[in-house]
Length: 163
Image 1 (tube, helix red, strand yellow):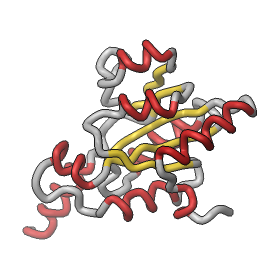
Image 2 (image 1 turned 90 degrees about the horizontal axis):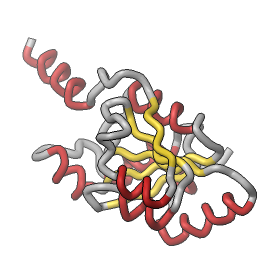
Image 3 (image 1 turned 180 degrees about the vertical axis):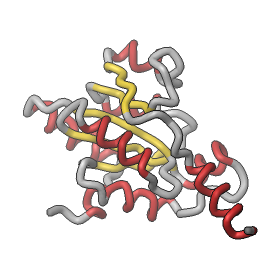
Image 4 (image 1 turned 135 degrees about the vertical axis):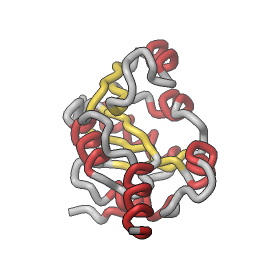
């Protein structure tokens, strides 16, 4: 079994690896998120994404982009820890860190066959929809209903600490 750390790849190297997978006829699926403490919703999302193709690449927001998206006090875990946790999942083939507010640039660079998003999106509300359509990337909404938010988990922990 591969070591989790070996699945974390810089974008330039990843582009070459994915080109090789595509030459072999394998379908590449791209999923992304902050993954600031892994929970069951993340697992179901990533397993659903993996079922859409042969190779699953997961973009993990770096620390600065999580702070910009989620606000003060986030992320709880640093980008290296979050990337390693995601990479340790059996369904994940590669992990790449990114700093942009959306994954449009990664879709342009990596050219996956499928862009998977969680059920908190619809095909019409995916932020990268126009880019995916222009590049001929199929969008897939995967996972279970979004009732496992990290923010809710943190709220529960805070409440329990005060009870």
